[in-house]
Image 1 (cartoon, one colour):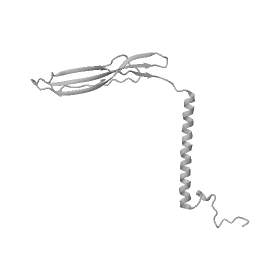
Image 2: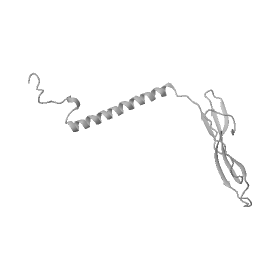
Image 3: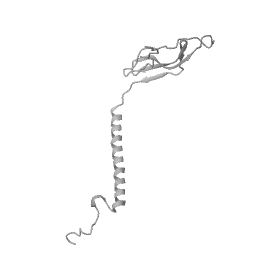
Length: 145
């Protein structure tokens, strides 16, 4: 396990569980690691200072006597000028209620648009309202006449 500092929630290490069997005795394996300082702040204001990293891997064959490098495994480290800050936080009840209202409002809006579309299309095809409401048919003269 390759890591640069203590673990924090959500941390992932790219080289964990990786195996690289060597089949070429004259291969040059190069790993370029970009190390990024990271600060993780918990809800209780405790802070973990650690590092994350990203890896780029290159492998190439080095012919013996070619003077183009040596076979082996090489690690190159670069510390990033950027600093990552992660912070846990909780959304309040007001935020939750606002989100629920937004969802309900969106459902009513889409339902109204769908109802208007169906009403318009039905009116165009049938010449009146859906189900005969508001339509006067010749056979329904009524009691008076």
